[in-house]
Structure formats: structure tokens, C-alpha cells
Image 1 (cartoon, rainbow over the protein chains, first blue to last red):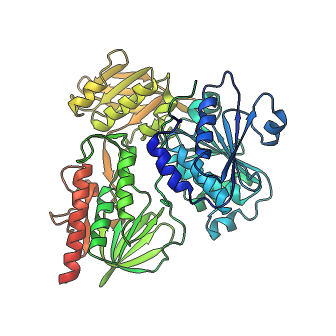
Image 2 (cartoon, chains in turn blue, orange):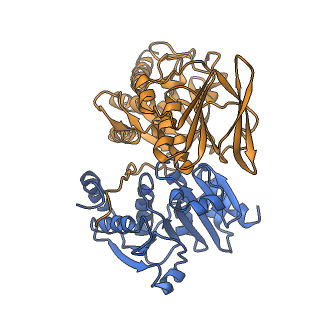
Length: 215
Length: 331
């Protein structure tokens, strides 16, 4: 028996049949002192058995320092969803509850090799010429959070300057404290700029540009 | 030892609105605004009558998305809110109607002999008939500190934010089912102390829910009390001031979170000036879901229908779609 229920596995198998290109799932974990690492690893490994498009690589957070640094992993469990190359899509914490849908969305984006953003949004982001770090703080019980995560992931895929992290807030209470996360979804851009709630794609892109231009 | 089974929620397939899927300017026989139980049901009935239909909404599911457990929708003795929504949507998507999600409708106006539906993103559509099924949203307390600390300890979504308050003292404002559902969520995530403040002298929640949340060590009830102010500690909530409505005595409760569950207001602004509403902004609709304007129908929680229940809203959606069909036949 796997970490996903039989019903979910049956449904997922059908859905994942639509994946187009290869999807690499890279898990950063460690054996000890990481409450959700095993679950995250097992989740990814089971999902990967449901489509031949997936491949899984597991790195040890303490031992594989070269990869840890290359992917900019500073906390675990972490999952990188990668297509032909690293497009800056990261999941920190266990993507359970509603956030499992975000993990599937990430796989869809890289598999289709298409960010699926509107031309207007791409136009807003086109002047971007410096690095942007978007952190979306979520809880697994928040139905609105995947809407925001999805857009952030699409931004990351569309623009090489953008990295988008889903952060499961309850697993990283020190970050909840640092960024004063008392409501989700909360988006933190480049450490200093933040907003709460759901914004349509275009307005979200405008907030990214505002953050980059110093608010 | 393998990890325990992980609870995941599968999103609806192709649920997202792809911008530009439904081009602005299209004309329909029926436009349904809102995709909660009434709007989705109306979609199914309209499709079965082969009406050229657009279902347009910001999201799918409405308030059910914030309902963890549904135990009173026939056919399911227990189902999670999100799963019920998925089943509704799955059924709607079997039919050939246009669906435009992620679109907030800001206005429905007469454009004789048709109606125009305008969205926040600048799209517009024309239609012979319109069903307004936009539901309700959380009501605000309107006290000092509420707006200032929104997202900084003030929350209208216990389902979303309760997990952030593990080990913290919180207040839940209200005494109905929503309030006690929030109490249940907060207990489950391990909030330390839960103060329940209700303006009325009694609790309105269903007895079964009150029984479920009974916890004298954690729960402190303040009946007949109103919230006067939400106070801060730095840039986040630190306390609330409550007042006994009889003695007028005030008391300060030190809390880090305030969950406001005092009821709902209608999402009827889009039809203001078009159709008749009652003093609470609910659209006046008769038992055929007809509003004061021929061709405009309303269904579910946004209307004056007395019971705000999923099953009632779904039935309303059915009536509205059939009434719109009759209207188109006989106008």
C-alpha cells in the first residue's frame, strides 16, 4: 500500500496519461530529524510510478551539498519540479491537501513546456531584468492557495529570472514568524514586498514588477 | 516504517480559466453569473434545454469550498465540501456550455431587448436572460482594528488560517454554525484557548456541532457580548476588547487571532439599480426565481430565499434555469 489512497491512485493514473514531455522530480531529504521528509519522498516516488514521463532523484540535504547549493535549497523536505532544465519551481514542505494540485500543476507546466500565461501578463513581465524570488505561503486546508501558487509557478516557468516557492507554512514556523504569516495565501517577493489573498494573474504580475522596482 | 497515508485533494481537471477562452462580445440566450451550487445546477438544466449558455464566475463552488464537512446533502451521508463541488462541476462539464472562470462580474445592466454582463477584466457579453447566482460573502464587524489587522490575525477563513494558530489564544466571533465550525477547526489544530464571543444571549449553532466542540478547558463563552475593538501588538493582533451588552462593562482578552464568523452579506452589488432588493441587499425573487425585471432571474443565497442551504440553492438553480427557458419560449 502506498502513501496515496487507492481512489486517488486510480484517478491520477488517468490524469497523468495526458503528460506530454518528461518531468524530473528532485527530492531533497534527510534520514533523521525531519518530520515530513519520509512522507514527501514517498509521495513523490508513488506519483512517479503512475506515469512513465516521471523520473525521481533523491538528494541528501546534508551530504549532497553541491546539489543543495545549485538548487538553492535551504530547508527540507524540498521538491524541485524540472523539465528540460531547472525553471525555478520549488515546493518546501509536504504538498498535501489542496497543495497536491499545485504539484500536479507544476508537472503539467514543465511537461507541456508551456507556462500558459496570457499575452498581457507576459507583456507586463517582459521588462524583468533582475532576479525575483516569490514565496507563496500556504496551508493544506486553504482552497484559495493553489490559485496563487499556480500563477507563481507559471511566472517561474515563463521567466528565467523568477524562482517560485510553495512554502507549507505550518512546517516552517520560524518562517511564519519571520514573514508574519497570519493569513494564507501570503506572497512574499524578494524578502521585502508582500501581499495577502488571491490576485488575478495580471495584477499579480504587476505586483512582481512593483516589488522589483522598489514598491 | 512507511509514512502514513497522506490526504490529498485532486483539483478538478481543466478547472482553470484560460484567458481568452470565451471571447468578449459573445451573445447568449442565457448567462449564469456564479458557480456555486445554484449556478452549477442552473448550468446543467440550461444545457439540457439546449440553451446557448455562458456560466461565468470568479471561482467554482463558492461557500462550499470553505465547508470541511457536508452531512446534509442527500445522496451523501458525509462528503467534504470540495469533493461535492468537484462532483457538481464534473456533471456541468459533461454538457456543451461555455464556462469562463476567474472572471468577476461587476455589472449586469439592461440593454433592451437584451442584457449586458460586464467583467472586472473588461470583457462584456450579451444575453436574452440572466441568472444571478453569486451567493454571499463574510460579513464584517466594522470595529476599529478589523481592517488594520486583516491578514495579521484577523481572519474570515478559519479553514485556511486555523493551522497558523496552533498553540495560540484566539477569539471566534459569532454563535452560529460557521462560528462553531471555526471552533472545531481551531481545536483540531491545537489552539490553546478559544474565546467565543456572541452578541446574542444564546448559541444558534446546531446542537450536534455544539456537542462536538464541547471542551470546558479550552473554550470560554461570552454570550451577550459585543466586540468593541481589535487591538494590536506591534503589527499584529494582540487583544480584543469586548463589552457586556447589559452591564456595559468591558473586558480585554489577550488573543493572537480573531476569526470573524458573524454571518454573510449578499454579493448583489452587480445588480444594484437593476433589480429589487430587500434591506439586506438580497435580491427579491419569487418561487419561480423571477426578479423584478423580466428576463433576470436569481437563485440561491444571493436571494431572499429563507433557507441558505446547499440543497436549497441547488433547487433554486434548477427553478431559475427552467424559468429562463419558459421566458424565452413565451416572451
